[in-house]
Each structure stands twice: as structure tokens, then as C-alpha cells.
Length: 399
Image 1 (cartoon, helix red, strand yellow):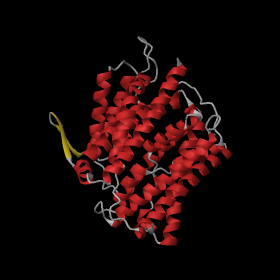
Image 2 (cartoon, one colour):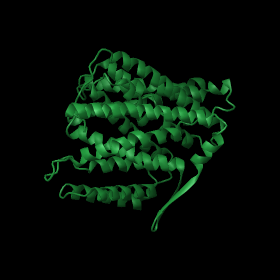
Image 3 (cartoon, rainbow, N blue to C red):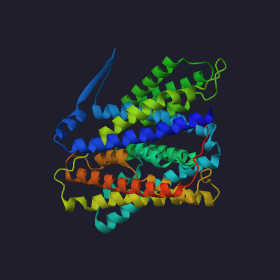
């Protein structure tokens, strides 16, 4: 039974990667076709959702980013909780390694960018752009090449990317935020605290979990912070212990129910909304501008140096431990994969260089992020494919 659940999960993961890749390719084609104006107009169009006195008005792009992607981060948070309590990360040293690697993965790109800034004259304010790993695209690529690799590597990547994402959000709050609205944020934290206590005392029916998540999500939107933060926090209060009456784990049930929606609706829509970049009017000089080179090399070299270096040092000093059954070559492949920095990097680029979407700086930011991400993805696929050749896939029980 455990083997069947594992194989079904991996098949869904691989199919999800294919759907994500097709959606990203479709976005690039549409963005550079006669329908590009309709595509970008659709993303910028506002849509209103109103339930009684609660009214939210956001663009399609923001509904996908802050709405649907909250479901993605909820599922990721549930998986990480399972691994911390019952799986790979229950060993504190195995948990320390991806956390420290994530910190190294932020320091490395910043150092590479600032070094190049002094050498080739890239704008100094662009240094935060290559710091973030795009967890959705990174996991999709791993789904293509990870079938013969130990499952601990996926957990390592998942945890690392979450910590990296939270670090990027904190960086945005420090460098670019005008301040959060603390009242709704405190209400959200209060709901999480109450929900965590109640959930471990009595059984909460599924509709109340849905309402609770919706309430926390709405309060987070009102606070002005990223919903990914509270989505992961909400996952932490979902009980993992099986219920007495039916022996089912609420956490496992939630993962089982949400994973297909995540795989075949949330992530493909996200890719279609975020991967559409127009190359109209691009010149060769602009394609190799200092800003483009600094961002691309920050993602490609900075990420692999920072992530792999921090993971190796943590293991050497006995602070952390290498993922179970994984070789250092495989860890290096995952370090390369962390250079895929699409969505959050583009978002930071908008904040670092405010202006029109077709301004020279914004075009160069997109070129740098896309270039560095593609280089990292191709190199990671090659290394992980080589490292996993001839190896039997690990079959372990998934939540």
C-alpha cells in the first residue's frame, strides 16, 4: 500500500512538472504573439470578490499570486511539517542543513552581484534580485529528473526553498515595505494560536478548516504581507496524529485532497501568469547589459556556491548532516537548481527599479532572471540526471 501511494504521488509530481512547463512555454508564446496585448491586459484586469461586507478587488495577476499560490504554500507547509515530525527532518541535524544552506544561498548571490557591480558597473540597488529561489519551478524541474534520486533530496530542496522564500519576504519588508498594517496581522496570529490549541483538543470538521484558512488569508491580505507566510503557519497547526474514531490523519488527508488541485490548477495558472515575458524591441546591447549579467551570474554562480558551500560546511562541522542516502554530487545538483529564481526575483526587481513594465531596467531585470534561471535549470538537470543514473528510486511512505 505504501509503495502504491508513493508511486502515485511521484506520478502526480512528474505530471505536474509537465503541466507547469507547458503553461510556461504557452505564456512565452502568447506574450510574443499578436495576442500579447490581450494577454497582458487580462493579467492587469481587476476582479472583485465580495461576500457580505468583505470586499476584495485585485488584478488577475495578484489573485493568482496571493490567492491561488497560498494554497500551494499551504501544501508545502503540510509536507514540511510531516517531514519534521515523522520524516527526514525529524533529525535536528538534517533540519539544520537546508536552513543553513538557504542562508548561504542568499549570501552567495548577493556577494557575486556586488562583486560584479564594482567590476562591470551594474546598478548597486539590484543586489537583492538574485537572492530568491522559485520553489514552484524548482520543484517542477526536480519532478522531471528526480525519479532515480533519494526522496530526502526533494525534502532538502523543499525546506531550503521555503526558508529562502521567507528570507526574501523578510528582505522585502525591510528594504522596500512602507510598513505592515499590524491590526489585521495580529488578528491573523490570534486565529492561528486559537486554532492550534482547539485542533489538538477536539476534531474540527473540514468546512471549519476551510473557513479558518480563508479568514487567516483575508487578514493577511489586509495586513499587506505575503500570504505565503501565514499559509505555511496555518499548515503547522493541522494535526498529524490520527483521529481516534477513524484512524485518519487530518494532515495526510489535507495533502491527499489538495495535491491534485495544486498540481494541475494552481501551478499551471501561476506559470501562465508569470512566465509571459515580451522580447519585442530587444537589442543585443541590452541583452548583455551589466544589470543582466550581474543578475544572471548571481543566480547561476552565487546560488550554487552559497547553497553547496553552506551545506558542506554544516556537515563538516557536524552542525548539520547530508540528506539521507544522497551523494555530494546530488546535493550539488540541487544547489544548482536553487538558481531558478523566477517569480520572487522578478517581484524584487519591480521594487528595486520602480517604473513602467517596459522600462529599460525592467526589461534587463527580466532578461537577467530568465537567463540565470535557464542556465541553472539546464545545469541542474544535467548533474541530477547523471547523479541519478542507474539508481533505483527510493520508495518511502509519503504523507
